[in-house]
Length: 294
Image (tube, rainbow, N blue to C red; front, top):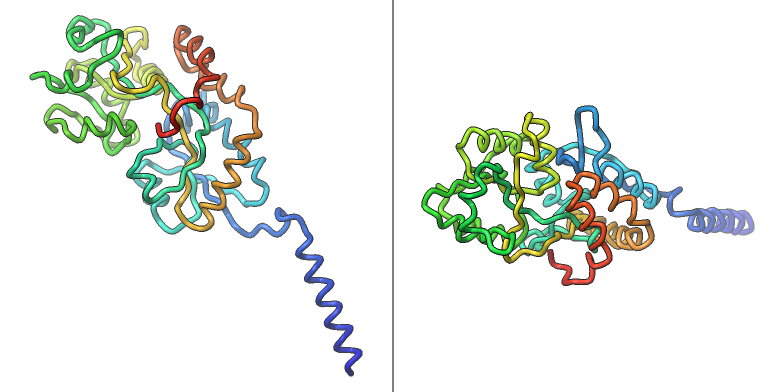
C-alpha cells in the first residue's frame, strides 16, 4: 500500500514538474483585449484604405511578439474605450497620449512612436485673419482664444495633450465648438467650410484624411503648430491599471525595444504632406531624446 502511494506521488510530482516546464505560451489562459478606435489614418475601419492605417499595421506585429497572451480586438468609440480602460479589466489601447490625469488610472508603456503634434488648421482664404496670432510660423492659442470673435472647433472629450488641454479648460466655452460622434472632425471641417468656424484643432494627418472624405482639397487648408508645444507628441500604449495590465506593460516595453521602428515611421510619414514627411523622417533620431512626458 505504501509503495503504491509512493508511486502515485512520484507520478503526480513528475506531471506537475512537466507542466511547469512547458513554454508559457502553451499555458496561456489570459485574454488581452485591444481597444481600437476609428481614428484615421492611424486606424481605418471603412473604405478602400480599410486596415491600412499606421496602428492597423502595428498591432499584428505587436501581437506576434506577445505569444504569452490570447488576443482579442474590439472596435470601440472614444467614450467606451476610456470606460473599459478605467474599469478593472485586462484591456489595452495602442494609441494614447500620456496626461497626468490619465496616469492616475492607466498604466503607460514607454513611447511607442511619435506623431506631429496637434495644431490649428484654417482655410487658406482665412490666412490673413489669423496673421495677428501667428509668430514664427506658430499660432499663439491663448491670444487666438482671447480674440472677440474666436470660434475654434474641437472634438469633444478628446485630449490634445497637457499643454493644450490646460488652455482649453480655461477658455470661454462660447469660443469653443465641441462636436461629438464618430465623424466629429469631418463635421467640424464642413462647419469651417461654411464659415461657422475660424479654425479646427487636431492632428494634421487626421485633418488631411478627413478633408478628403468631405470633398475638401487638403491644399485649401493651412496647418499651424501651436506656440509652447513640442513639434512632436509621443504616443504610448496604455493598459488598465490592474495586475494583468501592469505585467502586460512590462512585456510590451521589452517588445518595443526589439521590433524595428522603420516600417512604422514610414507608414505614418506617408500620410503627411511632402515637406513635413521629409522633416519627420529626418527628425526621427531625436524623437525620444527629450523629456518623455508628452
